[in-house]
Image (cartoon, rainbow, N blue to C red; front, side):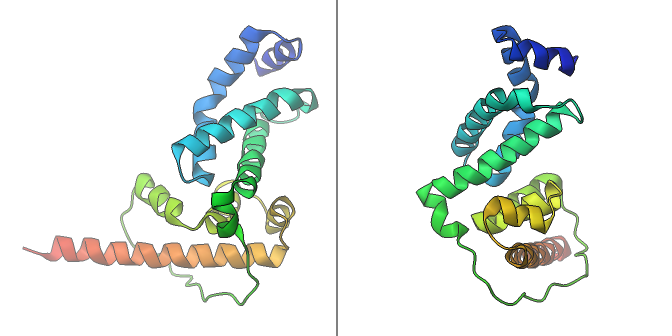
Length: 185
């Protein structure tokens, strides 16, 4: 698919091209949205809002990178804004300043598939989950996360460290459970 031509057709208001753009990127972007929300319904809402923003701002795409990366950034920003607006997420997005919890540099030796890890990440409180996804998965710097989330860089680092420590703790517990299960005759 020629993204350059597709974007130009969308900008001319071609409904078929707009549908093609949506169909080409929707499934992957739904996964991005789902990483930030607690339900598929919320993820679908974010996806729809995100594509509205994509179409609204498509004239700003400069063809200087991948179209998919540009759309992903819009989806992440839309997901964060969605979390900030939704009352059920707001109290869980409150960030507190405080000392870092100690984080082990040891990687837990556990056999874990992607689904299990994604499931653990989804169990994090929304604020931890958002920052962990933005930094570890999307590659945002703590400065960028701070700007997007409306928090300072230190808070982003702290929340990331806490999320990481919590995940390590859960993975270690899961590893112990698996070891006990396999050790039984």
